[in-house]
Length: 414
DNA sequence: TCTGGGGTCCTAGGACCC
DNA sequence: TCTGGGGTCCTAGGACCC
Image 1 (cartoon, rainbow, N blue to C red):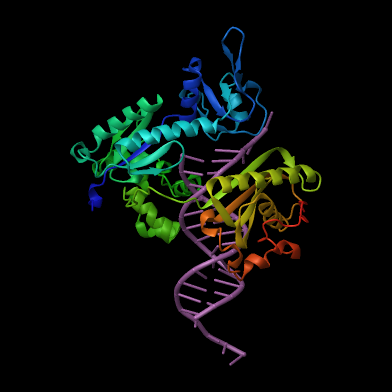
Image 2: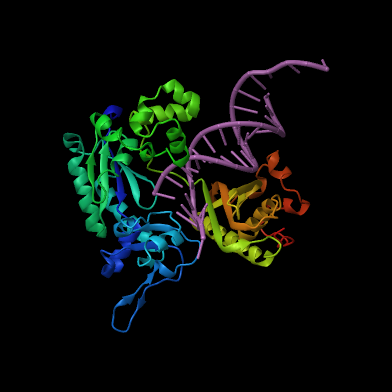
C-alpha cells in the first residue's frame, strides 16, 4: 500500500567484515595491516610466552587472492580480489590469516538477527550486506529514517562488536551507492534532491550493475561519471548498449529504481569448484584429476542433501591454463542428489570437451533444483523430456542416469 | 610468479510443439 | 515447392556481484 515515491530503503554493509571478525579473535592485530585469504594452513601459532605468531605475506607462494583486508592494508594498495602474490609485493609485512567461513557465517547470522528485531523486511545480499525496507516502520518517515538507521547500527554493534555502514534512500540503487559514501561506520541519508550534488559526480562504476566491461565501454565514449551517463541521449544509449541494458543505464543514472525488497528466495543452483595448485593435464594427471573430480561431486552431493534438494541439471565448468573457460551441462530425466549419479552425469559432460589443453580449474554445478520432499514418491514416473538433454549424452551406458545406484562403468575422466 | 569460490541474471540459437 | 508465428525448454557463454 505504501506509495512508491515515499519508500525508505536502507542498505547495510558490514565494514571489512571478515577482517573485523578476525580482529575480535586476535585483538592484538588491531591497527595492523591484515590480509585474509589464500592458503589453508596459516593458523596463528600460540607461543610458550602466550603471544601469537602470525604468518606474513612475505613468503606467500600460490594462486590465492585477497578475500578481504583491514583498512591499514588497503592504505598500502591491497584490495579484495587482488592476487596474493601481488599483495605480498605491496605489503610483505602484512599479517596473513586463512579464511574461516563458519565463523563469518556465525557473525552474519548475529547481525541479521539484530536487524530483524528492529526491521523485519530484510533482503539478503550475501554474508555481509542486506537491504532493509524501512517504509512502514513507525516513525521512520518523520526523519527520513535517520533514527532507525542509528538504532540499527547500535544494535549490530551490540550483537557483534562490529561496525557497519548504512545508507537510507528512496530505492535500493541509491541506498547501495550511499552506503559507500561514508565508510567505515557510516550513516548516509539520500533523497532525490541529492542526485545532482552527491551521485552524479561519482564514477559510473559505483553503480551496482555497471561492471568493469560496461565502465570501460562507457569510458571509451567519454562517459566517466554517473552524471555523464545521465546526460547522454537515451536513444543513443539504447543504440549502443542494447534495448534492455541501455534503458536501464538511463534509468539508473537518473536514480530511478522500483525494485522491491525480496525477503524470501530459493536457490537456483549449487556448485563446487577448485583451482589446482599447478595446471593439470587430462592424460598426464589423469588419476589426480579423477580423484579431485570425484571429491567435488561428493561435496556437491553433500551440499544438495544438506540443503534438501535434488538436481535435474548437472554441469561442469573448466578453466584452461590460458584462463579461457567452458561449461557443459546435461538435463536428466529425473532429479538426482547422490554422489555416484552426479559423478556419472558430470563425467558425461566432461567427455564433450576437448581436453588437450592444461586445466587450471574444474567445477561441478547442480541446477534445476527440486526440493527433496517434492520428489520422494513420484520418482519413477517423471516424464522424459525430448531434445538435447538425452541427445547430448554420447555414450549409451550414460543413459542410465535415473538409476539411484548405477553399475560403475564410468570412473574414467576421458 | 597475475587473476578464488559461490552465486544470479541475460542473451541467443536450436529443438520442439501448437 | 514454399511458407507462418508464437511459446517453452535446453545449452553455452558472458557480465556482474559478494
